Image 1 (cartoon, rainbow, N blue to C red):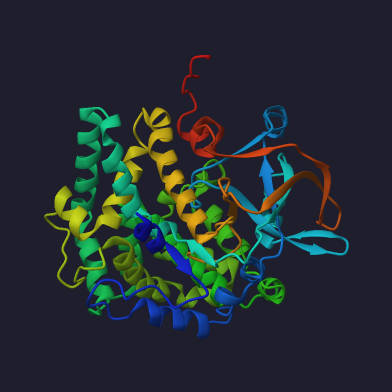
Image 2: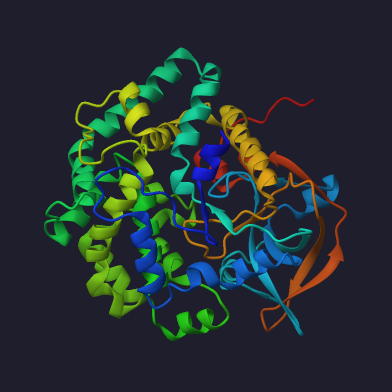
Length: 442
């Protein structure tokens, strides 16, 4: 289990992850070299301010926005949330300045777009240097699959059969494109960029995981290649420009304001080029080519078991057991998405998602990680490990001054509880299960 969680993390102080499946035309190490040394902002992958603060072992200041301040005061407790950080309290970094705490541009964006929320400042004193290992949620598929297998007895027979059948049928239906992705990752003739991006967009509804890959590839492209004045300002303080991909997500998917669901992220070629042109015109001409080259490699590395030969795998006649052996990461992602469409998911949520959170806490505690971060790119999405047994923490309410700086106001008497908040209190629960009945009082 520990090896699975280590595999789902990226160490920005060490070498790139192992070479991945056999026959890839480019290795993860080669890609990391290209990104870090061949892009305008690639240096931020290993030398940004957030990572430096973690490695220093000094106290860290984080901001968290909440719509539940009254409940937090009344209970004296803070809970975690599922998502890209698995089971941590979602935050953004703060940098101490003489006039106050300056939010990372990720945090500044949250302050602008979530003005109906209260703001908390959390000071974490880790007691030692923190490993700069971030969780790569794109590689959680194997963990999703194992967790499903360990707890599938909580499903009815009909639910279990539907989930397994739907996962396999979706992969088979998209097998032509998925096989083409593997062939491209192995260096086959790629064909026109326009056709590739349109085929990708058409495949996302069948394989929602492709929407996540598509979005993260574009986030990487925008943040590492941007040369806009705003990007340079953020780079000067050691930050990637998060506003680029936020603008892309909300312009490409009309319903993103209701629920940030990357399974719906599927712009075709022309729409993609238009959206990128609106964000940073100079990046529009190269975006389709980048997606065409980068996404097949990422798919191979986040779908297949490392023991597989990517040139020999085909999804055409796949069955559940074969996928579990050859492509456990992809199968796990498919099962995870199917689970979320079950009417009983609100009742199943604590079983499957809390199990993953507990595993993550154990891994983070062994590794000395009080503040896990989104590691596909160290862009400023950072959380609090509420089960961390070392160090100390202080929590305040905060006010935002006219300069956009945060100022702690009232210290809260709260305890970190390593438990996921009720699904109904999350954006997913409110959007997808708005009529879920309340549990019986106890």
